[in-house]
Structure formats: C-alpha cells, structure tokens
View 1 (cartoon, rainbow, N blue to C red):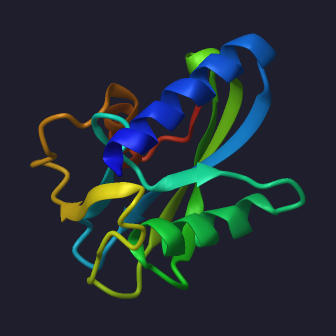
View 2: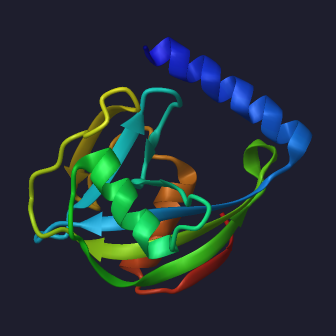
Length: 154
C-alpha cells in the first residue's frame, strides 16, 4: 500500500508542476501535558513532520486543523493556544500557504489513525527529536521554543 501512496504522490507532484495550484495547508505544533511534540512519518514521503494537511474548499482553517489531527493522530478537541505563523512554500510546484498553530492535546495517547497514510506517529521531547525530522519542522519547533511568531518562507 505504501508503494501505491508513493506513486500517487509522484503523480500529484507532476500535476502540481504543470498546473501550479494555490493551496492552503495547516499544521500543528501539538503538545501533550509534558510539552512533548507530536510528529508523524507518512507512508508516501520520507521524514518526520508536524501533523496537518490541506484545507478543503469551504472549510475554515481551524476546522481543518481539528479534522487533520483527528484523521492523522486520533486527537479530538485539542485546545488551540495561538498561531505560530503563516508561511509560504513553493515546493512541489505549488503556491502553498501554511498556517501553523500551537495546540495542546487533552490526552497523552497518540496513535496513527490513518494506517494507509501514516507509517508512524509519536510524542517526542523537543531535545530528542527523531533522526529524519525535516528542516522546516525543525525551524517551526525552534520558533515555538523561542516564543517567536513566525512567517515568511516555509
């Protein structure tokens, strides 16, 4: 199944290079009570990422955040503490704007809810992030740790 997701991802990236769509995404620096950070590893791309995804047409951005947290890591009712920043990414041929929230989970249980999309999900101490955490994810975590409000390039 992971092979199919990887192939579909490659096809999508090719379409994006041709059509250059404008998209809106959402991610969360999702924290537990001990300030561990939730990270996910997808089945179709390498690296560890903050949980999140695309905002659907007609969907409020914060509603997309809650939907994505439920879909990816089975977290319902996370409390949004603040907006970390709004970023712009031109990767994969897209014109992508990503809103990153800082949110707190009411529970410490974390699991990959979508077993087709996610290979792994886990809580990590900010000082012991897994090998393969993506550079953008490391930057967002660094901004959160510094108490900054970010923005600009992804």
